[in-house]
Image (cartoon, rainbow, N blue to C red; front, side, top):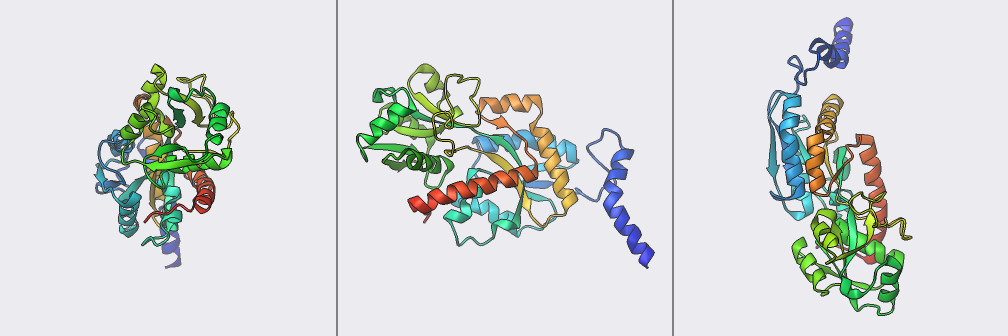
Length: 329
């Protein structure tokens, strides 16, 4: 009996490697016990957005790699917690995973009474980063961040900034900027980004932190002016736009990041296969080019790197949530 159990453990540990070696170049390992049925990927937002587009671009590539259909299912609602609850209650067998957005690292800080704990999930990979930029209408007459801050301080409480909703990354990025710059701006939440852009163009609001894809045409045409980019370096399409760090605010971050996560108690070999399948898929040149059009930069980080970034974001955003007393009802 002892020998039989030891042999089983050995096969469980090394079996996938043996099969992989016997089928050179194949993403489908016929002798593997997983996967044997379709894999469900749940989306926290509705169809048509950039996250939804990303998930559907990657699904057929991951399906080819794993040898089973990958089905994308949209379950929007409650700032992503509908999707998270569905994954938390699904079996830990690798057949249900989810896409994550920028609210993933902070949802528990905004909604302390969730029906699940965040340690119920393992982040598998941060697939893309969506840089944002702080944009202002030219009517303000400011051309640099220093000029904007000086003008805002001269009339405290009279200027406002828009975001796509309370607790979103762009809202918290705006609050981080307010704290760092010492300016008094009124937050105006919107339901949709086009409405923010429309009011910004007409100077009904004086600032917004927007995704690159949402405002690039207006920046290029001069209808809006970018003052700072939320990214680690300048972007080639905006070579004259400095980063927040360059203008003196290194702690300001408001990135639209997309990634994947799964139940934490999913077997490690399955998590590793899913992580690798998605990281490989998103790196394909044709995918990278398509995502560039959406203002997304492919990073395809490891699970460990994604976990570290999420912890840093939670610490950064947690402080601004506490100081600004931000709550989701």
